[in-house]
Length: 254
Image 1 (tube, rainbow, N blue to C red):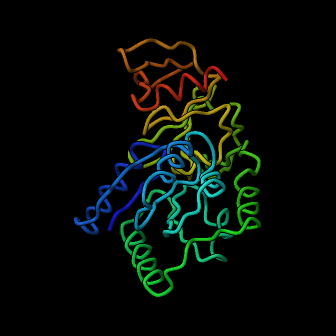
Image 2 (spheres, rainbow, N blue to C red):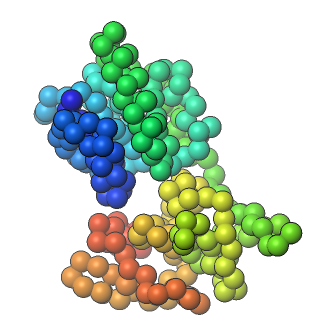
């Protein structure tokens, strides 16, 4: 089976490759792309694969832009960090999806579902425009501006304006506030990517999502990496992942 991966996060793409190899070592990963532009160019000039794993949010837009430029005749499994309610519209068109972080058993079930479906029908994938518009509307919902956290026996509401950064630590996700307070939140960093304002927050690495207003200094760490210092920072130096440096610079310049 030949598989194409369209995913804008390098770590997520690498994880997908690992899971596919675990499922079946004979699966051939023919290409991996992180943008609509590169995906469209390749799909337009290359025979289509047996299966595509496609992230909803790509480096240069939503994956639905691909469907507007290319007629896909192979099955697609969508991957996303959004909660299930945000993509229920896919179900009415028999399009499957996987929520990040992706579980191996769910990946296995999705592949087997598509193998069974397309062996029987062998029909091209059609996503109707009303479904696309419905999902786009759901995905463009207002970003989250407050988080409820637990402090002892009390609940407290924290504004995103007061959050300097989010970070993962010992299998939990934490926030660090402008008042130098640290709290645990019930969201993974993958999930937070779909909830936060992209203009204000950026995921610089697997461990950190930072607030633009919290940046106090940026230092060239090496030819291809950057070191970020934040206001009231308690953690060690924050390093922008090599694969995110260009996107980070572009985000700063917007």
